[in-house]
Image (cartoon, rainbow, N blue to C red; front, side):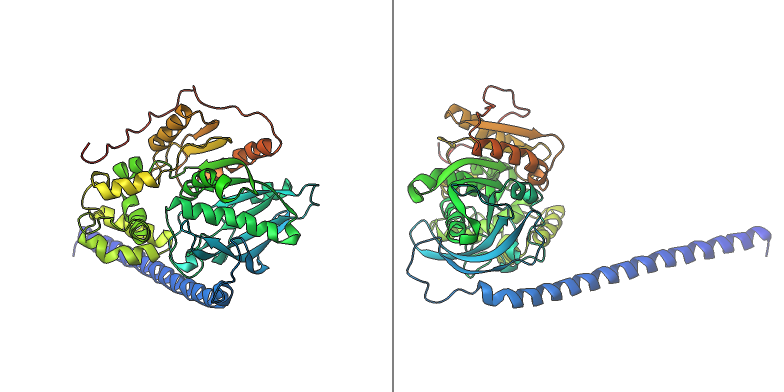
Length: 426
């Protein structure tokens, strides 16, 4: 055999050995990731089983008003400048039906001022509808609350509802604004019932995504539903504010596979005539219950896969269907009036599209709202609240201190407002 032939054989063997080694490394890594995920799932299951007794309410429920604290226990988490409690409390649907919600209350270590501590009610974003997706049931329940320490330093009590039916038995009323608002308001009532909070009657709402939807409805509901409370201000990061415009643009995207299943579980409980068979694909019907029950990470992974496979959740634009359009309009909160509102929006957001937020801002300015907007260049949906959190804290501090606002109406927005879809048949 020639020297060239021997060299060719050596290179062939070397390259193939390298290929085998690399593939072996990938196989080991894949096995490690699978094992790690299985271990994590087992640990999560054991944790949820241990928590279950706390989240199981008494039957029947006590015949008292919403906001009653049914259970409380210390949260096993380090809270900068304070401490946390896990609570179970009475809430209420908009039709008056009693419900049970879980959540958290965070109490500053500093002494309470005369008149009681201000309260900030945190309304969280979409998490998935399984009980274990509730923030208060997580291993680290404050992982998405990077601004919490700043609020503790300022002496504010912070509540964080899970929303009724998420951490507790039942079905979460996902994007049903009046019901979400009651869970937020009743978390404030619950905090005030705990003597250790020394909480006053003034409160603000800070929120993200789905929570922004809840916050805007809280502003609309608070005066009639909770006249004993004083809502000072509302702050929302990437709020799900303009549902018709969002559905109109997002029904064919990955968001359709994440939001669509949860809406399909929730809205028929309120909108009995919602047209499902003509609007949802057969694959969507096969998968929606399991997807809605997944926590956000798992649901997002499948949504990406479905999108890559060109599979869609909706057969066609739901805003061209009269029943879906009517529900989306009903679940779009009116502009906030009578109190200031802060809207924070990332310009790289592919879930709550910036032009839909611009539409809400435009409508709010036309309605005479005292609205301040902060646009964050390069920030996506996930990071809107964490990035905008410090600004929200400073803004809320000024509202609690009675300082004048600096409304943004009249300023040029970085994106043009979305064109809202027309009503079907118009």
